Length: 459
Image (cartoon, rainbow, N blue to C red; front, side):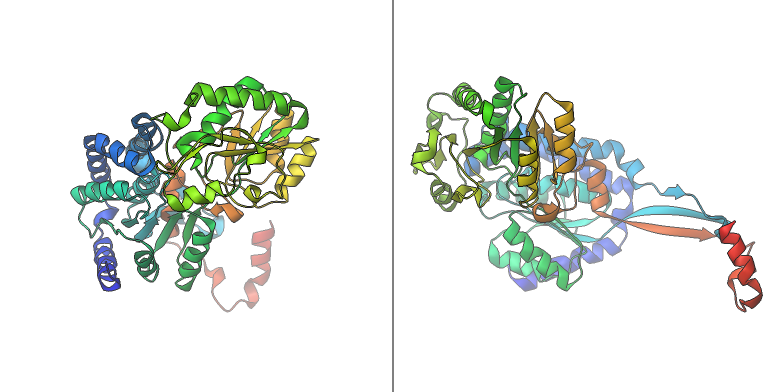
């Protein structure tokens, strides 16, 4: 699709938004219900598309993608009425007699750009929030997950006219054309490098953005942690989707006293969860493409691999791999791994760990395993990060009751539930002043009123 065609779609959506159709709550409800019905109708085809792109099992696709989208729709249908209501606030005596209130209003035409690692979830979930808030939307799925992109296009085309919600397929050329248009809001999920370009382009039009990026999310294991359960939950979170998760534990940072016991349990858990031969496990995913397969293989140092390490170029699979004797100067500690490599580093004290983490870029997630509430509170209070878990991984993003997002190098803004509704809404502050009373003190001449005014505000 060329720039002229894209511009026409943006204009069509802007005209439709200004018609006022999306302001009606019932219109938004019906749109969400239609989307929910269509997703349920095609749930098997959605799973097949995700399997073709990423090798995910049907269970994992539903647990981590389709099911979460359906859950977000159900949550919005339940709460949209209250989220969209005007909220009355206190009116100062100086503005007597008036009514002051905050009015959530949609931005208008929004652009949602999504990545390939959770292609269905990270396209449709922000769309649900955008629809609930009353916007029109243009979706741009990643070209790296073409099967899921085609499935998304099929669902959106069946549910909506393109002047309301539409999908733009393609790669970099289409991304560039889209970012050259004027949008009222841009929601981007992806890498930091592309996020910087999105923000640069948005700045030209002073367009507000949400950036959901990533980073090296640490997994701290303190010496009082339940080692067996810790290993089980780390292995789940790290190797889910073959490590291609923005909030996956990027590396383990553990007390040196418990490293050997932790490594032993991690090896056991990899075998229990993925079998003795993970490359032959049909429910274990694959790397998205050759480019990322080669990048991840380039981060592996055979001398430091203590478990796993086998690869299959033909199927783009890499075993869950544990690496020891790693330092912060190693190549795989210089970038987000985004694959099934788990480096293990150690610290001498929890204060050392906190200091080191705070000296690095702010991560999207942080995980702390400990039996000490004091240490858990200390780490979560003093370290900067987007969100995370105490004694678990990943699960903090699987709820509509809390916002999800990063800050600093890991992004800005959040979504899910009410936070998602607010992300795609501008909150107007309005004072409704009555006509039957008009206090004279604000009008000129001021000379005789100054002392009265001072007395009024300082009383």
